[in-house]
Image (spheres, rainbow, N blue to C red):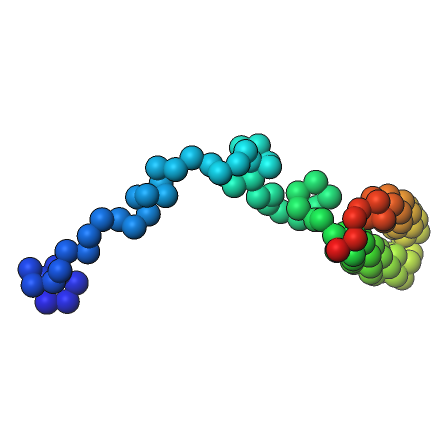
Length: 112
């Protein structure tokens, strides 16, 4: 029958991973508390090592934020809600400010 262990089948033997389960770490974790020390995520503190990737992320964030703010500005200006359109300009200024900080951090990274 399918899915049942037949007596004629050979014994699979010991678990091949048993040997490795008993071993300790080869080196201390680079990131405390995470097995293997591999950083997770994406960001300036969690794994982006290349200058070009960090700068690309900063540019992508600025472009996406600018597109959303521009859409909001056009919408609110068309509706005559100028204080909300002004809020969109303030939000864009914040995006540009933080872009300059991200770009400065990216320039200080090593090339790869």
